[in-house]
Image 1 (tube, rainbow, N blue to C red):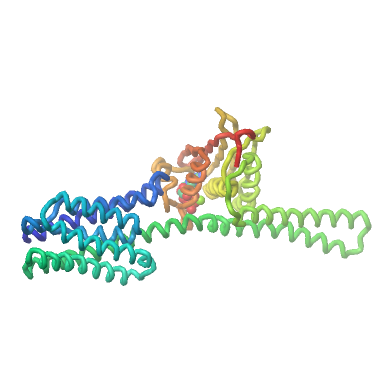
Image 2: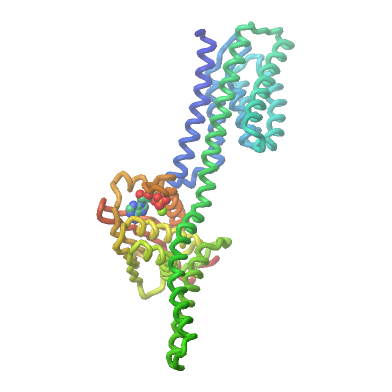
Length: 423
Ligand code: ADP
Ligand code: MG
């Protein structure tokens, strides 16, 4: 392999390296809930590979430098939109100017013209099919190379050998196609994750639905029985007694459905003052049918005093229900789920203790990672969502668990007094 190919392959490595880092950063963002990592942070990667490619180029003569800079330049502009496009244009020209040689002027013309074309195309780019994206990127790459060559010919009468041209074309084609596939892969991967996070609640809602229908059937059957008795020839006292019972049973069924619906119904979320005791009670009500179905008894002991915190009520409900549901699911049968709360250091502490199968240290460490589940039908997103909800409420979640014995989740939430709340 000659030196030119080797140098260009090193350039290709820089592009792959940046893509690899991009994937890792995305993973960290979700696994460790690093909200400081915003989408713009990802723009750093095309910039990094652009700079690295330009710092390690192939010198053909004193004026001309070749490298794979077109690839990060095109991908950055197309995926990152106009801001990144302009930034990369300016950056490319500054670096090229610093590198010296008269080749700068042909770069100035080719990168500026193609830069504007790329920024224009970036508006429609995301709607294209993958194969069209690859073809478009390859066309843009070849326009870029040919443009530079043409300008070099006009300016310096500079020509490259067929062999060099072939090397450039083959490496550019492979590198650009692979980089596009990888970029799309990484992007799709995380779009799917984001969609799943949104759908996580739906999964819980549908799981609970099975136990709710079970729970509603019992009072309905009882009510039906008593109504049937009413049609018999009975005295006035019994009639009154039976109809009271039937009504009570119907009320019970309505209550179960209502509790479930207030959780299941999507409502716009906004920050509000949250009564912690009330929310725990409501979350417990929603999971009682599930507990009954699994033979789990729920013990609830709450503080007498009402403490308030701040956050999105529905989200907080979702978080509590996720943790309660995990506790119930961890117990095969006849377990107890104990929920208590306390007030310590201006924080409300909520303890959710189960007598289930517990977790190993390795499982505890992985808790909250996307897709981490040990259940056959689990999503592995419940805890991740719960962690981010509590984090957004400026609280913390602690876990202590003993394998085979049980788990205790401790949520700590800051308290908001009436006066300090303004929403
Ligand atoms: P899923 O419930 O869909 O599996 P979660 O994110 O809610 O996803 O939980 C991830 C994993 O954490 C579970 O599969 C389980 O292994 C473990 N886990 C969570 N809570 C408990 C608990 N209370 N007891 C034992 N294991 C638990
Ligand atoms: Mg779960």
